[in-house]
Image 1 (cartoon, helix red, strand yellow):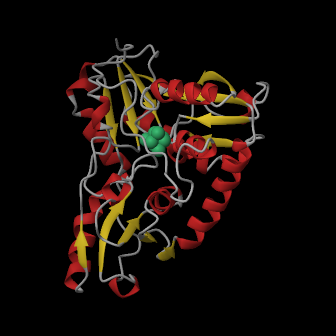
Image 2: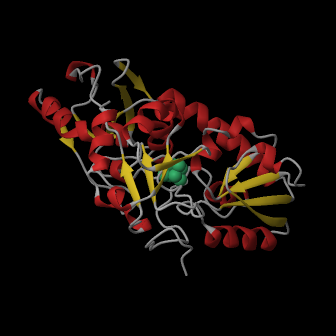
Length: 332
Ligand code: SF4
């Protein structure tokens, strides 16, 4: 990771040169770099955003600063342009190169998280030189790079091809592909450890968890519907539909807005089940941290008998209620 190089590039950006107060938003794993940042960016008044964040969907709206530098994520194109935000992805090289003989497919769709999207053209060439047919496809307007997957958007992995290879660390992104595209075989290659993981076991394990939550929801009466206040996660429109279909089925819903979706914030509300319209990571990856079941909008429809349960639908975000930004301010 060329962190110093990234900081030097930022210093040449006109937005940085013009700014007096600069806010820095760092993923948890990069917070230890505060010393290097303070040293390299001396001369500016720096403010470090302490709240955890997981994506470019989370641009703080109320800060008293001229410029925000967000590390670790690429822009989300359909949220519009934020003229006072620099997105510095910090992309990485491969500690372990791809080994075509360990890839169990003759043809595949190639995907990654943002960290390795710069490596995909090189990986594609190497796989093709070994006779593997590779498709590298740009997804919808929520993703920036060809092949890029978000935890809330797997559009780059769609297509008639039967297999998907994901390059990156962690299970959340390839799990989303496995849950959302049940007809495809998914293998995750971790370039930090050199591991190749068949996602079928994880898919089965999480589907069992999801159907158990759907079953609990089908018997519940009082539902809390969660709406995120984060600019790229806000889906009141879906929450209102959820509320309406719950009322129509004789249940009692109420809507809750919050920034960080955690059990601590929800525990005092009298809900039997939560319907999460915020980041899908909350429903899938954080599920075990909540004291009551948390389901997605699509899972709610399955629970109410409005959608066929036999074909699981993964909750993806394309459109939010806050499309078309031009700055920090709240949009009309
Ligand atoms: S909604 Fe969740 S998965 Fe999507 S960009 Fe934001 S943090 Fe990532």
